[in-house]
Image 1 (cartoon, rainbow, N blue to C red):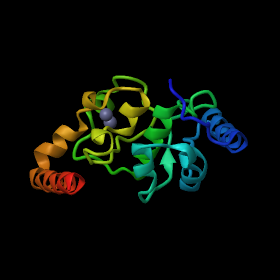
Image 2: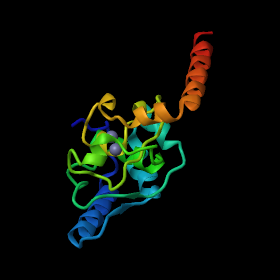
Image 3: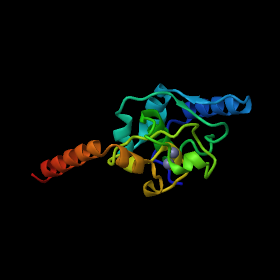
Length: 165
Ligand SMILES: [Zn+2]
Ligand SMILES: [Zn+2]
C-alpha cells in the first residue's frame, strides 16, 4: 500500500484510531468526523484527493474493525474516506456492496458520480484497492442519468477546449 508523502500528523491520527478501535471493541459503529477528515486525514492528499477535499463533506460511518491504526494512513483508505464523506447514494449500490464480495469498510455504498473523481468508484471498492473500472456503480448512473451524462460530457469537452486554447 502506498502512503501519501508525509503521513498525516501522527498524534492526532493516533487519538482518532484509538477512539475507532474502542468503538469497534464495544460493538459500536465508529464515526469519523468531518473536521478530522478535513484537518488531519485530508491534510496531505494530492491530485484527485485534493479535488474531493474541497467539496462539502459529512461525517463517515465505518464498519467495526476495518479501519485501524495500521491502515488509516494508506492512500486508498484516505481516498475512500473522502469518497464516503463527499459522496451520495448511487442510483443502485454497486455489485460488490450488494453481494458482499469482500468485507465492507463502510456500511453504505456511496460515490461521487463524477468521471473526474476516480471514475465515480464507491468508497468500499476504493478502500479494498480495486481498480475504478471494477466498480460497476457508474453503470447504473449512465443508464439512469443519460441526460446528466450528456451534460458532463459537454462540460468536459468545453473544459478540454479551454485547456487547449
Ligand atoms: Zn459500492
Ligand atoms: Zn463499488
